[in-house]
Image 1 (cartoon, helix red, strand yellow):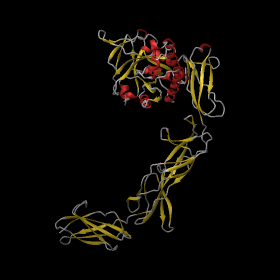
Image 2 (cartoon, rainbow, N blue to C red; image 1 turned 90 degrees about the vertical axis):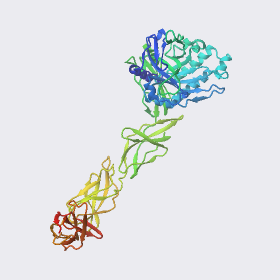
Image 3 (cartoon, helix red, strand yellow; image 1 turned 90 degrees about the horizontal axis):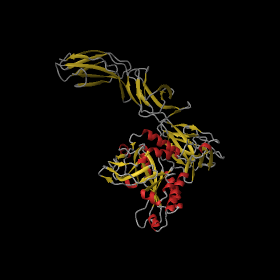
Image 4 (cartoon, rainbow, N blue to C red; image 1 turned 45 degrees about the horizontal axis):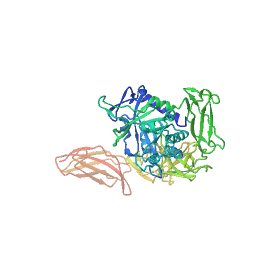
Length: 624
């Protein structure tokens, strides 16, 4: 048993226990894809049946969510193929990665197959190596199958070799074994896909079905008297049966190959015997041979190294992919070997520090790493670390940060070995903080004769804001008050006075240090003068009102308003009295015999700017 077998077996077992779309085969099984019943071989009727498909680029765009809902429990995906022309070039199925990702997202079990046209053992081994390359780091839930069949054309390389007598039964069997043995060495559970004719007549099938997973293709005929399709005539061991190429499944526009999977025999194949080995985490390079000792169990019992098994190591010194092989002894000597891979990766990057900042960026650097081809930079997004970029430099500026925003950064060395990147261990992440932004858009929202309320543009990541007031005598700004948000009310001010403020944002960092942003431009606000007391309002002649008030201390003048509306929202007029000592005004009304309302407020002039007090109480007058 090899490196991916235990993982695949566990996934298969878990899904077997949780699958709701399977049923016991009994004497026949209903196909949800063909909408018909199929007789089952008597030797398989006690097993649980799962329904699935095999797919390749020819099936086009697929909605795997709909496929899952249609009752598809597993898919066997074509990773690649050898062309049937004379050159026999190897090629990748262009939809393999897309299908694999989408099926995995839906929780559909996945197996893999490679369409072969090999005419020698060496070609079969090359195809196995290429298949493993296409699978990459992914772990299929089901076997990796060798799809060996004629192309159906007279000049096909496999067809031609067979017709020329170059591929007797022993030779074809050896080619199948070469692929399967190599794929097993590479850590996968091997399987053979062939039609019944191949299995019965082109191979020594007993040399295959005792060692490998068998996927038999046999499209039987419909029997109108029984209302069922016939049973396959293949008599050997098998774990899967492809019974039709005419299935229809929601989410796929083409006809699809339809398959039964027999869960219990498949579980036995995936288990590969009794030994199970836990996964091995990546190890940091030490310069010496690295010899992990993973937990090995059999049937839930933890085995003892040296008594029940021994371990062999390969490529376990340098950065790259290393392997261990667990070999059973004594009571476990008949168990299959388990070969597992683990990565040896670069050690941690050191001395990651922030070196500069702006209002929308942070700059940081780290020590050069002797084994690094490049470096991976990651940023924490609130739930996980995501890769920002890769760089060959030892300094980087991360842009697009909000003012005062803090980000957690980590860096790892990456070394490329034979085209594969090995990402090193990460050191402790470092929090880095952008400079607070300059406070802008300062304005007065309300004021009275002893207070002003200021507001400015928010900065989401600022800890607080500091407000400073200009000391006109000393001509310098002095700290007044701290604001936790982007507004503040300043109270206890003198009536009828001018005040100039500047504001800055402050960020308190993780280490307690504080960063202050650039001060805002100066903003001048005023407290209002006192509100005058209205003394009287009388109409002593037609269409005239005389209004009188008490003098307001410090006022430059007054404004008088009169209206037929007691809310002063319509039909009103105003007039300014520009002398502070004038405390009465004669008003002319538009109408006689009407009720008018009158009120007064004072103002203070600062250059061309007037600061008004609140309005006085209103008086009502019946105009002559």
